[in-house]
Amino acid sequence: MIGTKIFLQMKRLKDYNIKLSVMKKTILALLCFCLCQVSFGQVSQDRARMEKERQDIQKELQEIQSAYNKVKGQKKATIGQLTVLQRKMDIQDRYIGNINHEIHNITDDIYLSNLEIYHLQGQLDTLKSQYARSVVYAYKNKSSYDFLNFIFSANNFNDAMKRVAYLKSYRSYRQQQVNSIIETQKLIEQRKQQLLGKQTQKKSALQNQQQQLAVLEDQKKEKDAVVAKLKSQEKELSKEIASRKKRFRDLSNQIAAIVKREIARAKKEESDRLAAEKRNNPVSNPISSPTNTNTLSTTKKTSTATHSYLDLNSRDVALNASFEKNHGKLPWPVDNGFVSIPFGRSKVGNLTTDNPGITISTPSSGSPVKAVFGGVVSAVSNLGDGMMIMIRHGKYFTVYSNLSGASVNKGEEVSPGQVIGRTSEGEDGSGGQMDFLLMNENKQVNPEPWLRRH
Image (cartoon, rainbow, N blue to C red; front, side, top):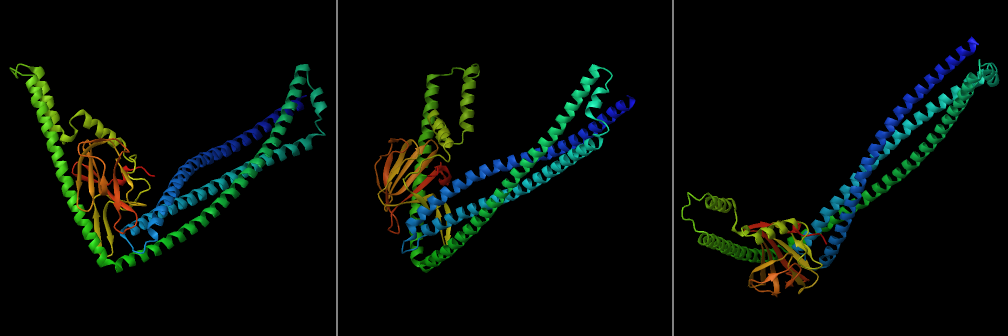
């Protein structure tokens, strides 16, 4: 009887130590598994963002390729042709960078998968070892302590039931060990299959990387050929650039005069408003009238704090806020157009050109030109080699120049998308062309980031 009790106590202690050891290793494996899952989650989110970025880049590449195809076959090399090709190369660089990022992420993914498989294999080895020890122990003691003897050696019925429950629990524990081993084996196999898939992905990404690098190399060669062609046309090109500079100089002078006139008009309107307000609210004794003093003081502060007379009235304030909210969302002034010459300075060989806006090319001349935002026409004028339309949107102005005709008049209110004119013929005789400028009062702004992508 005493021997049976000692046996039971030793058996329970041994089972407790086994369970504790398994629990510790299981917790460690679970921690590693959780860390891997968190890392996988971060990689998965990064992959989704990167895939979205790649789709955008591919769409942009298709658009710029379509634009380049329109100028590629021209016999005469142009600055626009070179600009479109350079933009295409820049997008191709971004595409390759995206692929490199993908390869880096897949490599990290493979490392994490190997780490998880390693820890799962360690967990499986521990489970197998514990299960083997329990089987060996049961085999060695099965003749000495028979199950029936163990049960019938109980002192009373309750003790016998406890021993039956213990044996059932032990049998269940053994079965749980078997199930854990099977589940862990299945999980390891799944992870190995996933690892093979990731290795295939990496191989495909590396092949794509090499293909896109080859495409970029071809583009560089094509760019060098266009640059060489342009250099051979340097004299003719210098005349074209000089003509453009003169046109832009005349255009900038006229824009500055119009903006100055608009500011003067707004200033006069504000002065008239304050004078009318003073007539309607006469103050007999400004010192003894705190209400009127505060009103005048507030008005004075407002006028002093405001840097522009073009945003004093509520309509202009609303227009400015609305215009600024549409940064990156403004529609294109033409359909099927592309930027052939960007904003700012461009250099071709020894020649440079400075564009106050962006030059947009279209498949054919006479294409409809549309207002990108609602406003009032500030000016319609003929610059000699084309028409110019200027529309005021609060303190912002959009300018549509080098047009073959205008269909609006000065002082007319226009709505977004309204046709206001037509594109003129391009300088190289292929398709249409127009210059699009954006002004924040007298300050030139690059309009391209304000336009939404096609």
